[in-house]
Length: 170
Image (tube, rainbow, N blue to C red):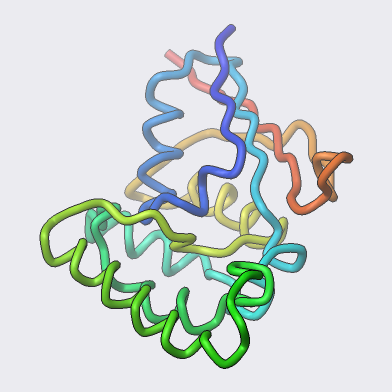
């Protein structure tokens, strides 16, 4: 048996369905995916809207890459800046937002990969996404959730753990 372990990675991937598909592809029957994913309710993403499964599936179908500008403005405008950049004085935040957007958009225009939280997660949208991947005509996976732990890790409970078994026949 083999496994994939990811911790605080999925939110940094513009196309999380493509990542899960690749993990599924390389794993054998009975293998495990361990995913620790930040829960937006306990991070600087708390004010952002939850990303729906349909959006992530649409990104997959469109072949979205990590050089994608779609989420830049929403990310910069709605993160909790008191946690994202605690050193920023409240009166400096608008200028910092403007500068951050400029940097990210310039990088995307140059074809570079950017490092933001493209999507935000809670257990509900991750479990819904995994269930959708089992049924969606573009992915057709057989994944089963075998373990789940909310408020993970215990030392810094800002995420959740979801353990998924890869089922393959033939």
